[in-house]
Image 1 (cartoon, rainbow, N blue to C red):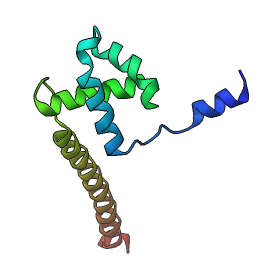
Image 2 (cartoon, rainbow, N blue to C red):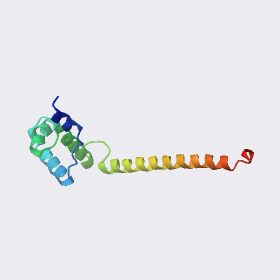
Image 3 (tube, helix red, strand yellow):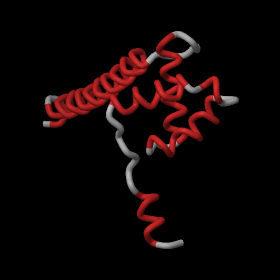
Image 4 (cartoon, rainbow, N blue to C red):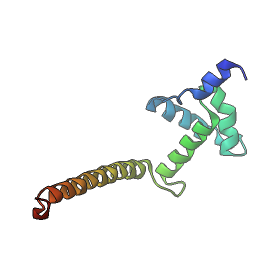
Length: 114
């Protein structure tokens, strides 16, 4: 494989601005009737928008969930879940630190060690 191909594979995915994502989603939704499926619409329109077809498809599906057209967790719920998981991870880490500290001080204060 050429080295340039491997470099492209190793790069991080693009972070698209919210306005560009919203515009791309609106474009796909407006033209859905012209295609047999969401995937076909995304595959046809993604190169014109300089977006990956799978990214575009996921954005469209999430937009449909957010508007209530499809079942699933909304963007707000996903953001809240992400925040709660991070908070839970931080609390578990703090709990482990406190446990280690209490074990350390219990050993230091143990009268049998003197």
